[in-house]
Image: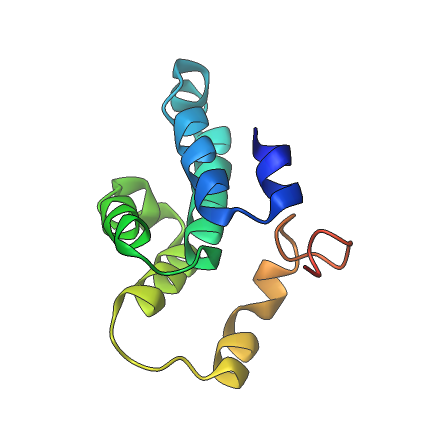
Length: 113
């Protein structure tokens, strides 16, 4: 389902599918997989177009305590929650190196979408 969502660029659906994966017992038992899955959840929720469902989900994601273990992603999430304008140049300077290492933002065809 995640691959289908990536093909259709349905980022909210991808985020929800990663949340289903995140809630499985095998992910919850493995801290590395848990953090990696939460990273994907954060990336795809900020890529999703803003609407009521996206807004509700982003605030629910923010309450996850595991975000404290990945402060860069917590900071990204907080940038999209507050009502300040995000300057693209500043955002890229701060986060581009980290984000280019992910599947969502790498230099492949999928990351360039």
